[in-house]
Image 1 (cartoon, helix red, strand yellow):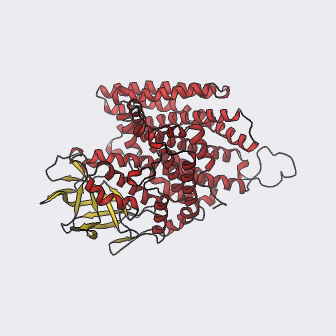
Image 2 (cartoon, rainbow, N blue to C red; image 1 turned 30 degrees about the vertical axis):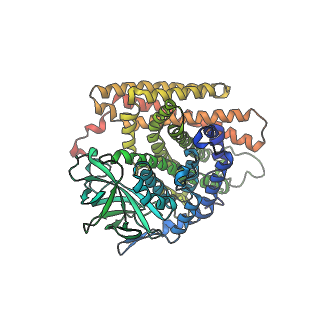
Image 3 (cartoon, rainbow, N blue to C red; image 1 turned 120 degrees about the vertical axis):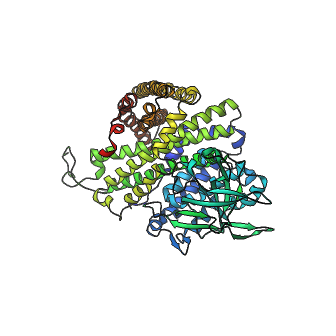
Length: 608
């Protein structure tokens, strides 16, 4: 580790929130009227301090001392309970929830950036409270008053944690194939006997709190097969004793195995077995057969959090490699400048290809950060804007950007982290330096909460063609307005024209593929869905960089100290880099999608 890693640069957070996305406008909405920059910055700086002072110092240690399974119970790192208490004290479990349930009612824009700091410090440790927040939100949104009283106060208060328990060993991502069952218990309304198995349950067992509430998908006996028959249940590891709810008894929820992951070792992942002794009880959340619809609230929140985690990990790795490139000397300048210092080795950052790798990391990290803020802002507007039409517009945009925010950050974040390792050279390929650990952590982000392929099918097969393409047309209008705003800066005209061209190409390609699907050629439409997602993501992040460049050019018009001027000029160059290098690839990707290139579909099974 080289010096003090900021993990996420405060100046970048402030710039994106207040100069690019103008989040203070949200304070005009009644939901956020009590807030302002003072409260926003207090929360953000507190999160940054916790990340840097407490979470990051334990990052490597928690990787080297992962959770253990002892006599059927998971034993996590001994400092995890202390970290959890500090995160609860900070308020991250309820930061975005209403005041009536003990929350601070902060905008998602602000909480997302706070999470970014924490995840950059120690993503595994932060998983515990964020899973609890998502599980509690499900009960808050869809549970009865009795269910909220039973579970919510303890979860939001920090004495109980929560998880999401979806998939099963035989089902994978195909949730319609789950077999966990729920049988009614005579005389107990909305309480069922649960039996089945779940796998990859993050935070599913630990020692540092009294209880864990698993928000579990299961099928009531007699309900339809497939996704239409799935219901949602709150299944605690320890259940309240009938007649004495303050006392707890074991609820027949067993840890069946510990998953030995290559990264994220600070957050235990495991298998659960419900009802081995026919005595596991679950409380129905909401209406029967609506479980998957309810769970999508937590799943979509988690997808955005995965994008944030991928961005945070790439950010920490970028700042590490930048610091290393400044202090590590090796080789001579290519131009062999004459001078007193020309005979010795130069810092890595003097080499053109190292600068290319650093700028690529910067473009990926900061473009992802901007996209996270944009998506979070649409989430705030979708829930809290007073105009129903604005809420619907924001919801359309959020739904369409969610698979992009998750997948772009995951896929390109891995690439960015790999570049950080490359800059470290041979030292990067050793456990003495952190890039290899960040690479292991990063690899999961394109797998969990839906693989990249799943999100590409969601984007092309559902989101961009929904309501006759209304969401895509809405996005085109928003991007078009930002192009017009950026066009007033003469130095951005080239970039505006490139983004305009690719916006038109994307619209035409989507029409071709959508018509192909409507005509019954589903394979022809979706076989290159990942290529379409990549193309679409390149455009969306180019849009974000155009916004960043516009805000930077505006700042450069005034008097600035040299350091601040350099800060904004670097943003403009990063925008040029991204738009010139990545949008150029969209022509190739569009050709693959439109031609339905099918070589991999034609390989005989015996030929592999």
